[in-house]
Image 1 (cartoon, rainbow, N blue to C red):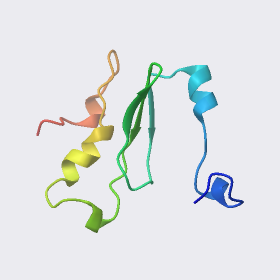
Image 2: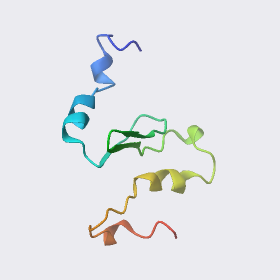
Image 3: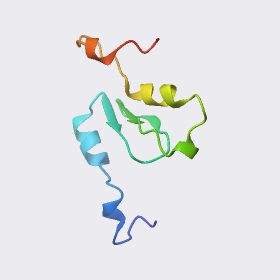
Image 4: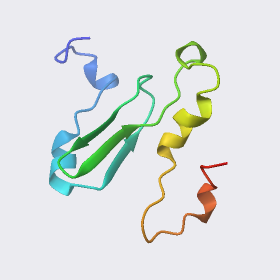
Amino acid sequence: MEPGASCAAAYTSDLSEVIDFFQPDYWIYGHTHFPVDVIEGKTRIMNVSLGYPYEVEPGQESALLLRGNLRLEGEDSSCLGDPTT
């Protein structure tokens, strides 16, 4: 889809100005069906969606889902579980 297409806003949002302005530590999103893990400025931008079953190698589901299981310094993360088990 072309970036200027009239329906592009229904599928994408360019929030780079928001990220640049607020500079959060993490920007986590989903539902795009392809992995993203990049650093923009001081912000780690991650896609944590799993995708369609045929897009995931058998046995890799846990590893893909745990990409969004972040343990943040100083935060009570007891509800997140142990990603090593």
